[in-house]
Length: 181
View 1 (tube, rainbow, N blue to C red):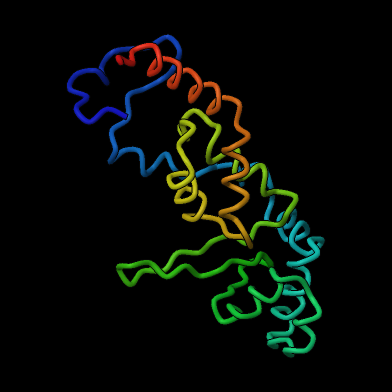
View 2 (cartoon, rainbow, N blue to C red):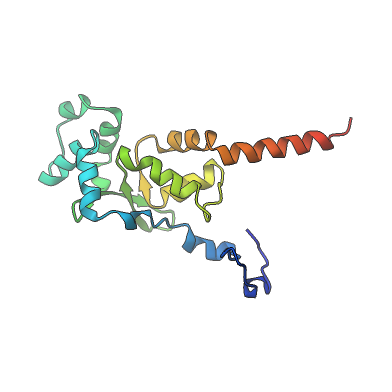
């Protein structure tokens, strides 16, 4: 990122890259990967997901499932059950309310397993995602999405990212070459 862009934004680049300031970047951080899916498709993915289908059944009836029913399920189902009052259904799609520090509320899509890799990739691997580290990628994902053990999935993805690993290796070798003893 560039803090002081001056007149750089007036230059034309043949590759289509533009200079982005930190204030402009907030607009770019929102992933538009959902444009490829209809609301009905996302609802179907959620209903077919082993963990989210149980939660869908509870929200369909607007009845909190009994504790004994929930305890027989996976840890993710139990976690969603504990946060049942934060769940919101819009057009058949499940969201979780995210309480923001400034007393605001945002809604995070509850991502079924089949779409998780795509979400992480779109928030880490794309041109504007810029292969940020775990914390920045996590914040990008958290702004719009949620799933159980999301932090672990993001750490695993970044640890296995070939671009990040290549750049880390290059950075380490340069430091070693310049090291004076």
